[in-house]
Length: 199
Ligand code: SF4
Image 1 (cartoon, helix red, strand yellow):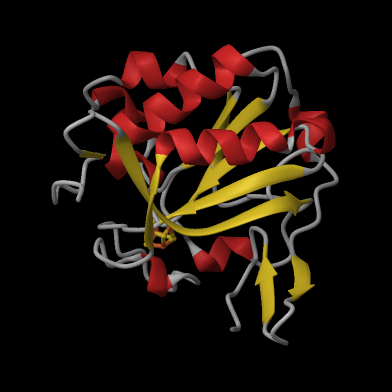
Image 2 (cartoon, rainbow, N blue to C red):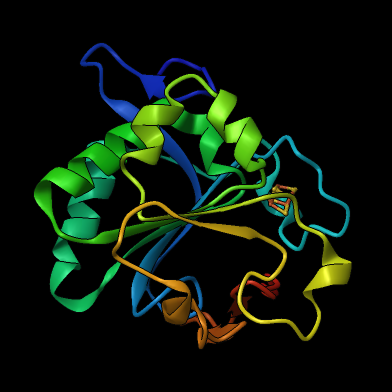
């Protein structure tokens, strides 16, 4: 069993585990092109009006070994342009996130977009921030502020930091604010930057 520590998990074999809330292999509303999206579980930031409060508890969701998640993502390579990390708050599990991204960067050409509720300054103060930033193409920073969100384009409540030349503002101009999935069990999920989990 993995040890109980929220900042990444390890067992005797030093495997890292990520606690995730959900995984969507083919999203078009969480960054440019078709992307696999990993919503991590756990967020201590408590933004008023957060549309995903079920992602807040650090003990919820499911633990997945980083190696297993990498395999799942690499299998999707022919069909997706990249991955997006969202939450929850991905950066509270920094060791596992960095391990995941190191593997994705080494073993694929997939792009990496990451949402965080932390500000740019807060991210820069984190231990291992240099390592993290070197693994991302785009980082969207800042707390959720619902008043600023309505009728505005993709991620208007975030500051967008282009960390490589892979994307520009134009690539983020026409991303749908939301998309709707009807699950096999009849549940409906709405996601995107105006997303609400309905069931
Ligand atoms: S950072 Fe995101 S998940 Fe966390 S409280 Fe704010 S909006 Fe919700």
